[in-house]
Image (tube, rainbow, N blue to C red; front, side, top):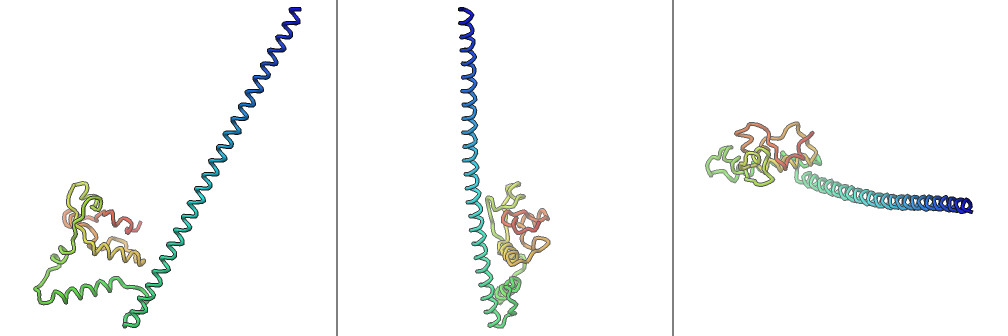
Amino acid sequence: MSQNNSQKSGAEVHAQIEAVKKRRQEEEEERKRREAEAEAEEAKQLAAEEWERVAEAERVAEEVQKQEEEQRRRAAEVAAQQGAAGGSGDGLIDVDRTAEEEEKTKKKKNKGKGKQTAEDEEEEEMELVGGAARCRACVQDNEQCRINTRAILRWQTNVEAGRVTARAPTGTSCQRCNTSLHRPCDLPGTTDLRSD
């Protein structure tokens, strides 16, 4: 009888072990299923975010295209007006020509007021900038940074019009880098204008 009980208890222990193994296996399968569902949900979220980014990029591209079309339309209008007014009629706005015209009108205004040297004129155009608008050298040495905003704006207009230069144009360095350090200036506002 004790042998019979030990066989029963051995069979019961074996059945209990099998039940525990089966329960652990089911728990493991349930955990893996939950992980797979979580990964699938995360992948779905990532796909939705990527879809939103693509849609936003398409909207931005459309907006840029509309702006370019508007700029072309305006350039065509200006070219038509220049052609009607006796301009060159080549369809492009010549920034250098407008700069020359500004120079002529400035000379006419200054006529009879005494001679003004190029240094005085350059000094008038220099503007003091501070904070993050200063060049690296002026920030590093904690110096004042004076820039020629008119020259920088002219450079920016030329780049937007498609004219690319090998070097930074004259007058686009700050006064200190130009006169004391004798090297090109690294202004934060001109980094996107420099060709790589």
